[in-house]
Amino acid sequence: MGKSVHKKNEYQGFEQGPIRPPSEASSLLIRITRNCPWNRCTFCRVYKRRDFSLRSVEHVLEDINRVHRYVLEIRECAAKSGKVYPADIDRLRSLDGKVDQAALGAALQWAASGMRSIFLQDANSLLIKPARLIAILQHLKHCFPWVDRVTSYARSHTIARISDQNLQLMADAGLSRIHIGMETGSDKVLTRIKKGVDKETQILAGKKVKKAGMELSEYIMPGLGGRGLSREHALESADALNQINPDFIRMRTLAIPEHIELYEEYRMGVFQKLTDVETASELLVFLEALDGITSTIKSDHILNLFENLEGQYPQDKEKMVGILKEFLELEPAEQMVYQVGRRMGMFRALNDMADETKLSHVKNACASAGISPDNVDEAIDELMKRFI
Image 1 (cartoon, rainbow, N blue to C red):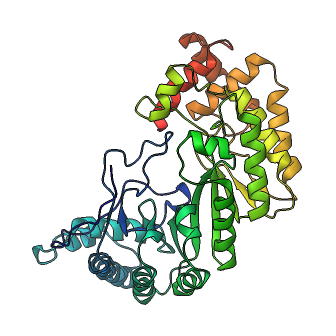
Image 2 (image 1 turned 90 degrees about the vertical axis):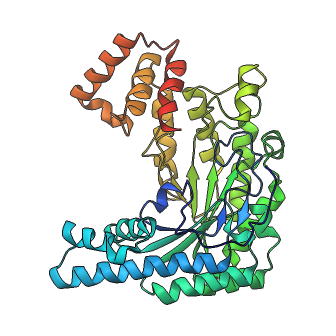
């Protein structure tokens, strides 16, 4: 759908968008924009058939004010008794019959998580005019001065067009971390997936964020190049990240549910999806090509085959490379058991297969479902649909 500016209308109450990064699970979610201004990526299922719009600053500030009011009430309850009891929550839910239940729910959830971070939604909050974003950031700082981190998604294309001065002003106002979906550093892959940006712009944007003193999380999608562009995807992505040196490199393995554009290419055989073993080989090429950086690798998503594929460069490089080599050296039947056990939630790392109880459970599940090394990837595709 096309980009549109949301018409000014009456405030309808506290809003939250559909997603946030896994690393922001404890954050208060404040919605600045609705949906995605680009919304053409062939691998993405989020925001499809939804118009992009800007929320008015006044509405965002009112969201913040409502959460602030409930946070103060919650803190007052906790100060009296040391904790918040169900009776306290019931009282808050019925205050004068004018309670914004969504705002109260957000405040209660945030309070339970420690109230240390805030995430600005939806897909590209930095698209709004810098002065407006700075006004929102300043109000957040005024209401919640104890917060450690304020973060947001942003597109590289958007950041590249913001002046260094304005990025610095955003950082000074409290914006401390940017999440960018780089996905790949390959121009060929970027064009195929309709990302709307090239490698050069990705690098420029990443460097601008770092120059402003904000933390930077770059997301890479293993498998996105398919079989034909797997090696290029790995090497070009590593090259881009080597030039940026982001604080975090976060992995999100490609999945292809039926309701995304890429599925049609996959169904017709135009796009050849990597198996888990092929994805592990691609990751090995990628991790070995990363060099001269001090980034932290994170594998914080259930779609990833190795939850423990984490560490900081350069000191943990060999450990992470070793995890992949160990998996690739396993017999196909052992690889199959680990693949299924990981997606069943039984295994988080290869050494979990040393637990005989877990191992037996997974082997029995494979046998009862008729899973073999020859059909394991089809079975995995079905299991992964639960997490998409």
